Length: 209
Image (tube, rainbow, N blue to C red):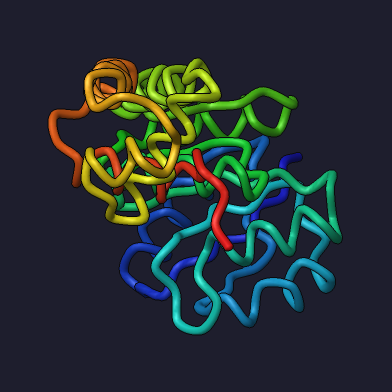
């Protein structure tokens, strides 16, 4: 029997999921939580095998709670069920230790299959999010193949320096600065200095003091 803790602040949604799970002979809802602050207490009380976790919760959000649950109860599986389609939420959830990530428009059959899969130690990601995950990792790979000089130039870009100022700071020619910036744009798949700066900050490609 797979014991489930439902975590969502919407009563209608919890009622709907509970009704669906009640029809399954191998799944049992043992508890519910409506806020992030409740989750650890409920996990301690009910010792669930798996948590169906929303992200947008009162108090601590679902990603913060997932990290706490995984640090204290590593054997408890966490399946995120959310409306957020942004790849940043997906990556944050996975970094926090989530074992699966589904969107709330997922069919009941897919939710049931995902619960069983994560409970067996597998990972599940909503099909529509898979492409975003691949794209994100591709971008991270691009960030990792910047040369040391390109990283230095990118750092100066983040500081707001012009090409001439970068040239003077790094003791290289203006022409080389332009070449490095073009290479950075190509490798990071961006089209402007602003996009490059935002990408560098988000992905921590350069050191910050």
